[in-house]
Amino acid sequence: MANLGIVIPAAGQGKRMGAGYNKQFLSLLGQPILAHTVRIFEESDFVSEIVIVGAEGDIAVIEEIVTQQRFKKVVAICIGGASRQDSVRAGVRALSSAIQRIVVHDGARPLLTLEVFHRFIEETKEYPAAVMGIPVKDTIKEIDSIGNILATLPRDSLRAVQTPQIFDREKLEEAHNRAASSGYCGTDDASLLEWMGYPVQMAEGMQGNLKITTPEDLLLAEMILENRQRADSRDGSSV
Ligand SMILES: Nc1ccn([C@@H]2O[C@H](COP(=O)(O)OP(=O)(O)OP(=O)(O)O)[C@@H](O)[C@H]2O)c(=O)n1
Ligand SMILES: C[C@](O)(CO)[C@H](O)COP(=O)(O)O
Image (cartoon, rainbow, N blue to C red):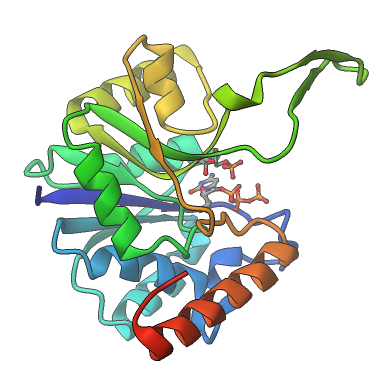
């Protein structure tokens, strides 16, 4: 499968990171987090276009990163919206009409490997929509607004969902447009298709595919990358 279009939402404020600027410009082993993320797709033979979505005030910095890193597949850097959902919708519109299959991947998830990405697109190629997720490790409880526990959810049927998420373009655009006109908000793109009643397939996620959200995540990401680089130089394998 070739000709994938990638939308990378990177227009958040990074409030939980508390850096005072977009966390995706923070250094992860000497390179901006966003550069690590874009490189995964730049290096994939299945990808033909990448769109990065940034906050208005961050566009110049993102352009600089793209130029410095010599990324060739970035066809647009567009301005995002108030929510992640608005940002992804803007990014999808910036892909050329040649793109009929779209992958959405958070700018803040730089640790996905090419190997896992390729396994994901191979495993999900027959599905109009699919996400990756991992089994949850903790017991998950549902609570009410004052902290009373309402239910302990059956863990075997729960997954912590990650990106990448992959979609037929037509379905993704339809779901985003409908959600925008109805005021429906989801925390990921798949939930918009679920809301419309479309099936979404779950595929196996990756333990190390962190979303860098807090300073602790950044430390952990550095450790994982260092460990991966050590393993690569020893025997060519990755964490
Ligand atoms: N309006 C928004 C909000 C988020 N994102 C992107 O969506 C991804 C997941 O969001 P998250 O990790 O929560 O990032 P922030 O919104 O920046 O973090 P916070 O909630 O702590 O401010 C990130 O790559 C973020 O840049 C986006 O493109 N547009
Ligand atoms: C899309 C996502 O990464 C899946 O886990 C997540 O829902 C993004 O949530 P955020 O609050 O925008 O970080």
